Length: 463
Image (cartoon, rainbow, N blue to C red; front, side, top):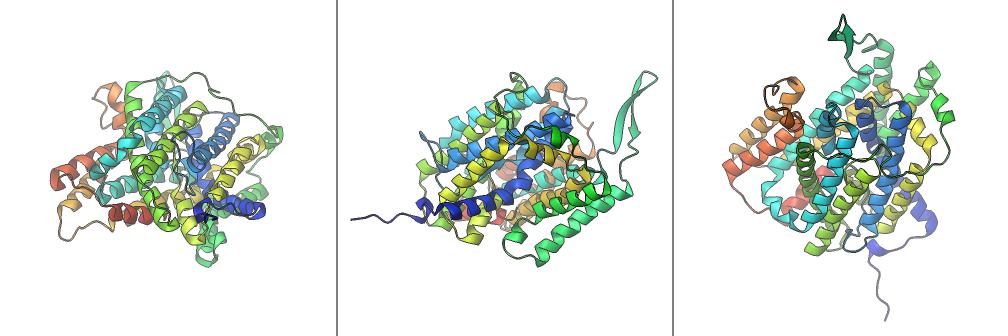
């Protein structure tokens, strides 16, 4: 007797796999390259090194996706998942990037440690679910989006509003004369309007890749105006190999490691919801062992990220949403997407082209991308009972307040020990800690049902 193959394990014809896999890549591409652009420019790396970060990120995206979808030795959920760098790690990494004693090698050390931590704790992460009900996860994700909006706004403005200069032996901040120029603001607005028009009037796939098409339109306009230059694209090689530890051996610092491990817990909680939602969409049940394999793949992807010069990885929720929109459940589609990402990571010209896109173009798209992250948190909070449990209002209000401290007043914690600054200067982690503590204080520890986790994950598909 022949056994019926489940739709998740069905191998589609090669042409169909290629088209559907490319669709998954295009849906996640703008979000995938955003993090290396943010961190590379925060570290003030030269354009060639930022382009390398983009290539490394795409390459590691492919590796992490293959580990998650194909699976090996107790790793991988074997569902249609695309892996990408999590935005939850951006705030803490920006704090580390601004600390000369940590820098890029300290970031990679914390990422590697977080990956090992994720591999170890994967089987136990479900026990932490009672600490992360929707009131906590929704608040954290909303603060992530709000924190990232500062990056998007500065991109739209053309850089940073103030420059650090040494005048008469004193380090002072002076206004950036190139910030907020009318031409740059006009381009950012043009990109935003193109994205909004595609979302409003586009259908199906076009609407799904509206952000990417908006960036392309902005790049074309910038090139026509002469502010996008292609010299470095022409100088970049057509093919190159991504080697481990390109920037040197990582360094390990206790507070950044603890910080990134906390980020890892939040990321894995979100991934757990995504896996349960995917199980519901695809009709393929997952048990505790399967969930542990999926979460372990998050850890393996993050470990690979640290080794291959990039950052923490998680399942991309927009691709989970695409599975629901298209109804295509085969994991071999995302395997194909992972292979495409691997290939893109080996093409330095592609990364150089992305790096050449002016910041103002990315600003128009960033307002949408990062704003959608905040909106996702707000959507998750719609599942929270505020009417009969007023304590939830205080949890959200106070947690958001703490999350805003580093944004509004960067020197607020200057009197505290310097070793704590990477933790205290991350509004995301402050928000997470306060939200968890307040939820336990007001609501106690209640076991979340699978239905609640799936509902929260489906809300998160928006971003």
